[in-house]
Image (cartoon, rainbow, N blue to C red; front, side, top):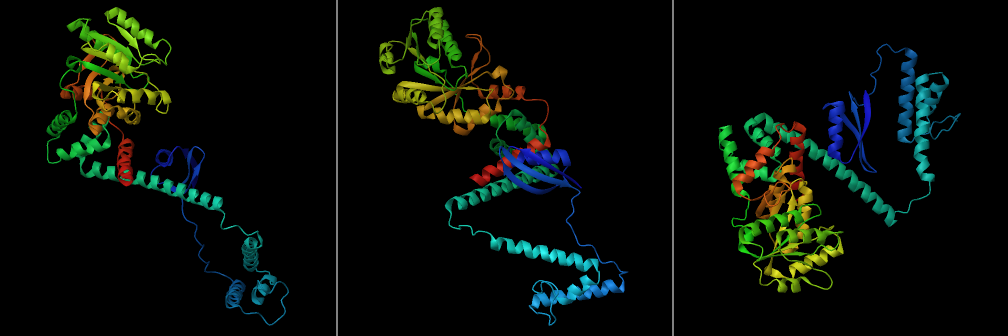
Length: 450
């Protein structure tokens, strides 16, 4: 029997390690929470211990010994006391068992030794100091340990159910499984994949089903149909650090200047936290020949916007700060106070994971977001995560930025073009069965949480 311990961050990864190392026939012997994750003990070719069947050729002496042992154990269970004076502790052993031990029977001696050990172990807790059953800290620790154990078992069960669900789909619905794989390659969230697949469940031809899937996907992506800078007004770009807000603002400003001239554009920056941030925007203003103002302690956003009231387009750059930074809260509150006077666009890097994108949305949604701009598309491995966020929260996509050149690498968002770009970015390597099983396990987890 091969026994091995496995350590992982969660139960799903631990089960994956067990399958890769020992195979699907491995048995989980124990699991517990440890610092940093989960510890699993697994065994291969594991059999539960069982009693050895009696040998048919026992000697007459051994048979007599067994009869004495049976009689002795019966006396112990009935609480009987032998009449003769015992040579050792009569409360623990019957006379017949003692006689068998004295006769030299190894079986009787082993049984006597085992009964002594069991009685010693049972009497040990009775002599120990009583535990305070009303200790709140002890009760809380016990509850936390129980919750951790249940959470580990739940994760293990979800992982196994995900593998079973994917195995059934892959075996009984191969066309559906193929479409699942292709949508997962694009990077779309599992819930959106499931909804799209339900729309083509009755289509028998695989190619036609795939084309209909892409058409439904293009129709489901919300986009801004009119170019925002042509509508004019004040537009603020918000988003996490490194998303490309300042570069995108430069592209929008240069695009407008090339078409309408520089006399109707103004630039505003609220980023006074990064070293040299406003100098970068001032340099851009000198190149485009447009005025630049900084919002600081002496000049509020309302005052700066009043100063540029005669401009057709005012582009506002903001600082990318951590979600719990108080300066970010002040900045967002100042933008939200402007109401409909300022339209806010969320700048998202397509290279970010779906969780990061979702966290950014929940951080900046208090500004009444009018749409989003997807940047760094040329560096992204997939586009489905960003498109999935836009579809889940109804956030229209306004522009797509796929390079550093100003103003060339900026395009308006069109539904079918976004889908084509997402398909072209998808990897040619199909997801493995374990990856698909994890997708199904994630669906089961979200269903249970909801």
